[in-house]
Amino acid sequence: MSDWRRDLLVSLSLANLVYIRSWAEVLTFDRNAIYWLKSPPPPAYFLGLILAIVALTVLIWLVLRQMARAKNHRVRRFLPFVFIVPLLTLLNSVRTLIGTPGQSLFLQFVQQRALAIGAAMALLAVIGLMVGGQRAQKLISGILLLFFPLTLLAFGQAIYRIIYFDPSPMADQPAASFLPAKPAGAPRFLWVIFDEWDQQLSFAERPHTLALPEIDRLRAQSLMATNTDTPAMMTDVSMPALITGRRLANVQAHGSSELLVQPAASREWLPWSQQPNVFDQARALGFNTAVVAWAIPYCRVINRSLSGCWWWSGSSQYNSTGTTAAQVFFNLPRGLFETVYRSPFGQSLSTVRHESTYENVLRQSEAAIASQQFGLILLHLPVPHPPYFYDPSTGRFTWGDHLLTGLLGSGQDGYLGGLALVDRSIGELRSLMEQKGLWDSTSILFSADHPFRHRPAFDGRPVDHRVPFLLKLAGQERELHYDAPFSALLSKDLMLAVLGGQIATSGQAVAWLDRHAPSSLSD
Image (tube, rainbow, N blue to C red; front, side, top):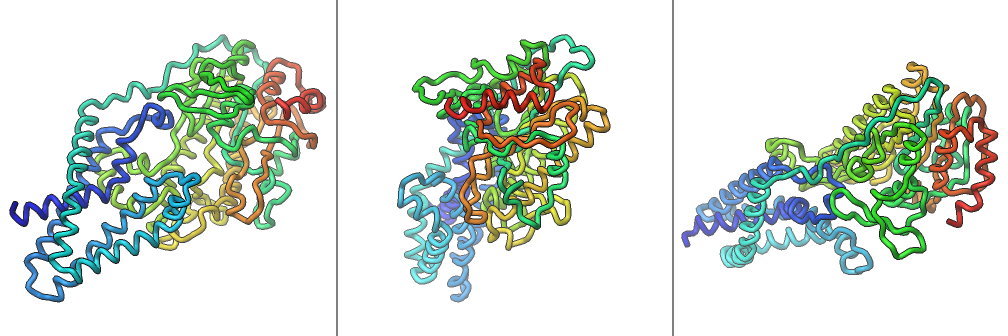
């Protein structure tokens, strides 16, 4: 084989390895992993990825040919430094492919020190090329040629998935039919869940630098429960538990349109789509129901219980690169140097997508509220969940938008900005409802699926398992505190009691909680 052909194969093999994380993200989806996605990887992504690899292959090949032809000894000696960049990009791939290290001390060691290990390996490889000359180059080329079959395998799978692309298994399913409209004056309930909203940092332990005027204004006319226990610390467990009103031990995705749930103290796995839930019971009372949310495919799993449904998937490095082949081509190289949360280019691509998701969910939430078609609406908003992007000092979505230094900042520094965005979101929803004349006539529960899980990394304090619970009943004007402990699992039955007319005043809500709170913690 001629030298230039050999160099071309070596270049293609190295370029393919540089993007191995990208391949792993789109070629290793099983029937359960796709549960979290809005759609399977589209042809545009595979085309953009192939083009990015071809472009890098050409660049590497030109360097290798220059090394072979260079007459100047110094040029030949220092050209290998060009390979530091592609070698360093393997760091992010290694970190991603390790995933969750679990109890493996070796994987924990590698993940925690990936930057140092990768930098050392890249530097040693380059020094080896400089010192070893052609012998080292032949050794490294031989190793890369051994990996060349991976390139053929990846490209072959990509072409197959482009040809046989089929998004239908992951399409949202038809919603339930609309029920006859309720008469004027019928109860209406809005259930607002802010993802990872922390009780302690919002109230008892709020930093003096953090102003939350809309939350304080809301509290002044709500029943505020100060001791509400979260049903779980993970969204994928907590939200099905809240919606069914049952404590769950675990959940497991089962294809794109089903989630298996395991009730506490049980070994049985049950399909979430078939379990009685708050929306079923609201429809039995004659109310149309809706969900506007992120992260969980409500519109594929519990669509039979909903008259209206809209959802957006969570952000990952894969789904944040764009929707066209050109966008993927230009964004993939950048993604090699960043994580979901950090980037040397300012905000990561995943952070930018998270901003867009938040705005889409909020705008659709406002549309669902204003339509007045629904008697029970769940809004599951993606803040203050990371990645963080809101800067409360400017009121703009520019948190972490700093070149280079953004890669070094603490991953949890922006949580207070996330709380400020919760406050702003409550203000926007309230303003809309006041303009439409709906605020005083609608009962609203503001709560969370789980508290701030990364509290120790934020300020060294332990995680508190309580979540905010602010219940503003229709017509309520005064503040009331409820300090007895109870589980947020009571949200389901409490909302149904309001819709059914058993609870209309804060006094009745307190009496209802007194009757049900003790047993909720032992279910």
